[in-house]
Amino acid sequence: MLTRGQLWTTRAKLAVATITAALLASLTLLLALSVHPAAAQVSLLPKDQIGAQAQPDLAFSSRTPTKVFHVAKTGSDSNPGTSAQPWRTISKAASALQAGQAAYVHTGTYYERVTTTNPGTSSAPIWLMEAPGENAVIKGTGTSTAPFVRINKPYWVVDGFEINAATVRAQAVRFDGAKHAVVKNIDAHHGVGNAAIAFDRAEDAALLSSKVHDYSWTEADGSPKDSHGVLVYRNSKRILVKGNDSWGHTGDDLQCADEDVVASADDPTDITIEGNRYGNTHPGGALRTKTRENAIDIKTCRNITVRANKMFGFRPASTAPNGTALVAHVNADRVLVEKNRFWDNGVAASLGSQQNCCLGSVVFRRNLIFESTTASGGKGGGVRVGPARRFEAYHNTFHKVPAYAIRLGDDGRVDQAVLINNIVAEAGSAVQIHPPNVPDLTSDRNLFWNAPLPSVWQHDRTSIFKDPMFVDDPRANDYYTKPGSPARDVALHEPRYVDAANSTYCHAGPDIGFLESCT
Image (cartoon, rainbow, N blue to C red):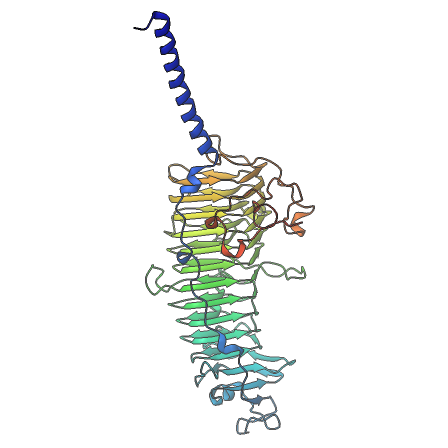
């Protein structure tokens, strides 16, 4: 039998053991929270569900012709088309060329509408080319609304040419049900109508390394109407728009939309928009006419990749409020936005719209957003999201955004949101949340500096609140960080947080932010 003293000692030991167990449980929970189990448990989108899943088959375009014909202003269409006896019209070449053949079009202005006639093959395509080192211009005339160049046969390459629409209402180039077609190195400009370049029911087609500018359209009362640089339209699949420079349209630089603007199996699919320049200055710095609405507007398109583009200088318009560079809404889905640079825009990206219905899933990674503006009514924002099914943001850098870096749920519910490894520095606010529209938010290992968070913020248990230490004049030096930056080597680096193209890193680990800074 225990004495009273022994009984008290036993009870004390039990109490201490109970308290110790509770403290250990609490400590275990705190330690678990410190590595943010929510981030470890979050279910991310599989790579085979986001972005373009297939690229166009353009291998045919790298072949060489077996025979070359010639077109010149001094020629005749009754000639054999040789260099000594050239044809006179491009239309003659377009109708006469057979698989494996090409035509060189020599210097001059050609007042024509050209339509392909014969099909090429994968091993023997047909080429229509501006003669090397010369200046062949296709120029608008008359009242016909037929495109200046219509490609409706497979395996064609159109290379070179200035297409001066001269305020005629007609598309410069139309991929009209074309399969396996490439247009490159053209300068299409100053036309009237819904688009300069149109992909309509096209498959495995591309616009490459071209200039597309100053296409306009007006309503009967003279007010501006949508006229796009590039329109990816009805049931087009595996389309590549790459390396182009676009400006000065009364619509968007590029719009992707199905005809009925309703999600269906006929929506444009597997569209890649890569390495283009959308903005209000030439690469050399000279000012040029602004595009009135957006750089890129994605509607009812699925599996879209927007990669490595430059988008800048966008301001509000009556039909495009806020001055937004990139828009995705109206049932768009599976959109990948990566490695782009946004600057001097009213808003970098607006993803989802209550007025224009729904948005599916978007992954936004490795982008740089800096110096958003409130000039001319711009909102000075980074990325706003909602309504949307899923939004994932990884490894982005935001700097000098006066309003917000990320805004979630302001216009509708965002079912799930994930924010990991982002830098937000010098922002009016880092993250704005509009409850109850954001029921499932995972946020971790972001770096915030001079960028206020909501007063009730309960996320980012491993956040860093320090100066990211950008290099001097970061906008001219790509926002690398200096040695000793708190953003270096500390990002979460599970494979699902790092896309395949950025799976390697310098030093001890990956950096927070949109790129790696290597000494």
